[in-house]
Image (cartoon, rainbow over all chains, first blue to last red; front, side, top):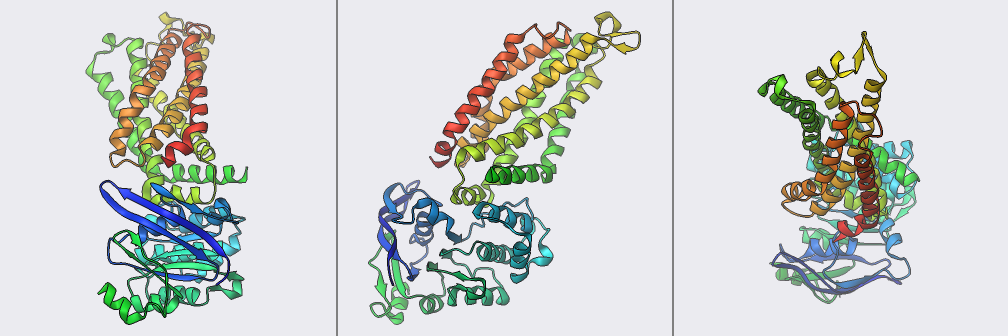
Length: 231
Length: 238
């Protein structure tokens, strides 16, 4: 691990009477690959949404340090339950549109990303006709185009078929796609498959009742102990 | 400029593919026109009432366009992804407004044509002075242009007010109801101005009559453009 990329302090987020994240402080470093664990409703997704900027915290702060907020967002991608695509635009139009916002969209690159994710035949179809797995694949395509340095994965394998899972797994294992000069510097990973998440990451975060515990290395939190905790 | 073009192209595509709301609005407009036209005998409907019908129908059907525009952003939280790419709120507001204005004006022209077919009899009567020897006179040509200008200004006003009220209602679970509640009171002065100006226009009183109503519409447009540009980001975030 090297330099600190982002620091957050005392983040809180409440929905109605439910306090989803009660207290979360920590930092994310370069070359740190984090798996975030917690039981259902512990606040995992909310914490990812807070860190990625989807939600604004009720209180607390996020310090983007040298990178700055705007740059961080431009170099970040979130793969979550919310597709963040326009349902009444085609797969191609959605990818082209977002790529134009993040940089310069090239038709050949968009088609390549669609080809790579197996969506080339469905490129002209509206997203509202897509299955969950196809939307997940489209999110992978958006990621391939954007080549983000920071990724927040929120149960990214949900709905993906075996081919889609293999593609995503290779991206996570290789920390990007070297052939495309894409390198992920850091990610946070939420997955209900404890073993898979543990294997793919270097640091363990555990959140309980909206409170993020002190980060642990794998030595400090062996897999058996983690399984027991999530029991 | 590139971001502006990209966002505008996206909005226009969404309106182009959003055929369902055009259909709903058109059917609703025609239904309302027919209801008014055939509920009352033509001698009981004078042009003053007829122009009010035109504007009431336009206001109601425009709401479908505004709700559609709001829904596109709500579904799957797409606007958040746009905002995360660093796009400023005022650019989103302006591009959404421009696309809404185009769509509403197009809708207004369709409504105006249907309205002319159903209520235009009085305008074309030789006794009104608008139609003579089988040809449209200058006052009648002026009237059509006056109504087009009035329709354009009102569409701009509705679109701007609608985009601001949409973003106010966006995060609420009762967004559709809330939007109606906020939108109607704010837009009523605009609709009264449009109706009043149109009434004078169909009476063939010329461009200068009722210019204060047209000025009020223009002032509304300027005020809400400024309000949207300044407040859109804040309203969306908060």
